[in-house]
Length: 412
Ligand SMILES: Cc1ncc(COP(=O)(O)O)c(C=O)c1O
Image 1 (cartoon, rainbow, N blue to C red):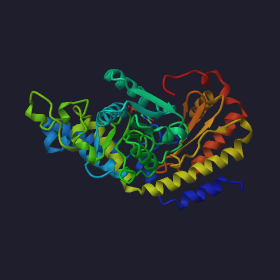
Image 2 (cartoon, protein in one colour):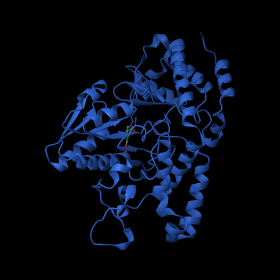
Image 3 (tube, rainbow, N blue to C red):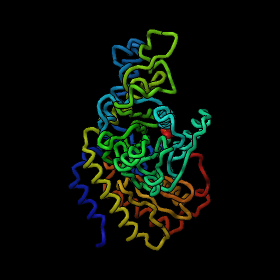
Image 4 (spheres, protein in one colour):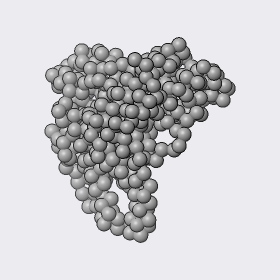
C-alpha cells in the first residue's frame, strides 16, 4: 500500500500522545530525529531552572540544601527513574555520568564475584563501556580480562570464569535489543552477575529491572529522559547486593554520615553509597522535569507508537528512496528493538549534514551509519513524511555532494 502525507496526518489526529508535543520547545522548521542522543527541551524546564536560580540559589543560598531539599534530589529523581525501568524503591540513584557509573557498577560486581576473572561483553558495545572496563582492569592488575563476542554468542559464552556480563541493552548503532531477563537468567545459571547499560532503553522501551532479576544497571539522563545536555546519569543496584557492594569511588556523598566529617570512609546504607561527590543541582532539577513528563505518559503507549514510527519510516524509505542505496542496518534482537532506525550508506556523513542543513536533524555514527531516533512524546507521523521527502530531494539533486557537507565536525 502506498502511503501519503494525508494518511500520516490522520494518524497524528488519532494519536493520544499528541498532546505532549506542546510540552516541548521545538523550533519551527526543524524535524528532530535525534532525541535518542539529546532529548528536546521541555517547556517547563526554563521556568523551573529560573526559579531554582533566583529563589533557591539567589535568595536562599546554601540554606537550600535543607530548605529546598537539594540534599535529597539524587535519591528522589533516582526513585522516579527507577519506576521507569521497573526497579524497586531504593534501588536507583542519580549520580555522575554513565561512564563513571559503569566503573562503579563493574568494580562492585567484580568484587562480589572475586574468584572469577572475566568480564564478558559484545564487540559493538558502546565504546565508553569497554574503555571504562579496560581502565578498571588496568587499575586492578589482578589478571582480569575483557572478553568480547558477537551479540548472538553472549549467552553461550558465559562460563565458570565469567564474573560479570556487561551489556548495553539497546544497541546505539542498530537499535537491536537484548532480552534482559533471558541473558540475566543465563548469567546467573553460570554464577555470573549482570551490568546493564540502559542509555537507549530508559524512557524508550518498557524495562523490567526487577522482573529480569538484574543485578546492576546504569543509564544517562540526556537522551529519552530529556534532562538536557550533560544531564547526570543513574545507577541501579538490586537490593540483594547493596549491603555487600562496596563503592570503589568512596566519596563523602556516599558516606554514612557525610556531615560527621569522620576520618575514614564508612559506606551509607542502601543505594546512597553509590553517590560520590556534590551533585549538579541545576542539572538535577532539569532532569527531574524531563523524568516527570515521561512518567505522565505510559511507556507501553510510547513504545507502541515508536514501533509504528519505525515501520512507517521504513516503508517510506522503501517507497521514496528505494534506488538510492540505503541499506537498513536496524535489526531486531530477542528483546525487540529500541526507538531508532539506522541505515548504512557510503555517503552517510555528507547526506546527514545536508539533511541537518535542511532542518532534518539526525546523526551519523562511523563508519557509515545514519541514525534517526523516534521520540514518540514529541515526534509526529507527518514529520516522518516530511523528513523522507527532504531526503529524497537531497538525493535526487545530489545536494549532499557539496563541499560544505563533506567537512567533518568534532561531534557527529
Ligand atoms: C550506550 C551508551 N553508553 C554510554 C554513553 C555515554 O556515556 P556518558 O554519558 O558517560 O558520556 C552513551 C552515549 O551516547 C551511550 O549511548
